[in-house]
Length: 433
Image 1 (cartoon, rainbow, N blue to C red):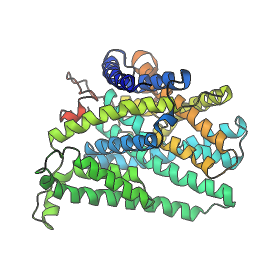
Image 2 (image 1 turned 30 degrees about the vertical axis):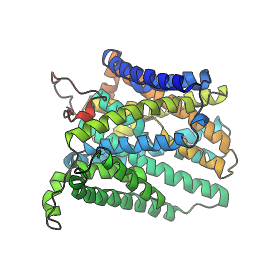
Image 3 (image 1 turned 90 degrees about the vertical axis):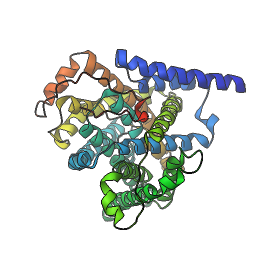
């Protein structure tokens, strides 16, 4: 394509993204779905562009988007909300991961004709949820802070679970043995060390940021420092996403740690100012726009059997998701928020990245595993957005609220507008009710 045509297409896509965001307020159709479908049209359907066109830039771009999404999500997690959410998050993560692994593994075993170990690998790869999909959706839908924090944390923790368990199972398939003890301690060490690294890095940056602001053009320096933290943690073999999330949480709550920090240093710790938040919000709006289009054009639609399998497995995943919320989530959550949580189990970046590992390692059936993962990414995103739409527009919402009648009552509506995702970074974020 001519360079001028590419630039015009980029401009048109940005205007479309704003239109889709505005359309959500009228139709409750999330822009995530529309952007993904747009990627499907220009990619697998019309073959106008392919992921190969981006070369090595594509995976790097998706990782950058994920890091910034987790960081911004962490900035708005207050410690008291985080403390209340953590216990329910761990149980929800483990229950949902186990159910998804069993469901997808069973479908792969009986419908995909994979071996037991290959099926388990596939189930572990898609056992988590995608923060890149969940974070924008929860912001658009006005999910309460407690439920949002639970969903953010679940997506980060389940990513770690997926990575460690799936890699351990791939090794087991290649060498013929599974070390359960090593698996558990590897998981624990990854979570603890990644969190500590992210928090310590945030504390250090909070003491430096005021000096950096004396230089010119420094609005993006916090993101640059975050990238350094993510890259180093990932290089050391720990979880970059968990480090990015904990970096954001620590920096967003830095004023609460002011007294403790002053015992060790005379410098005043600082967080992001409204201008920097606004700039970050604008950058994220652009990145997430291109990210979901990239997800759509990366999905393979070459085999009808894979697509049918993906639909069946996705339906079973979303039938089991309410049970995971009922068992694992905090029952003090409002019923509407619990209903939203039951509708949000999309797969995304981590699953797509892990899907390539069986192929790279020469695992028998690796290509089939990768194709089935792509099918699940597509349909779980579509189902999540459709379920949210039908919860608002049909009797399905009343059914979900009835199913979660043991949860807390919904708060009375407050007559004020919630900022859109596009303007959220401008320091205008209101507390979710």
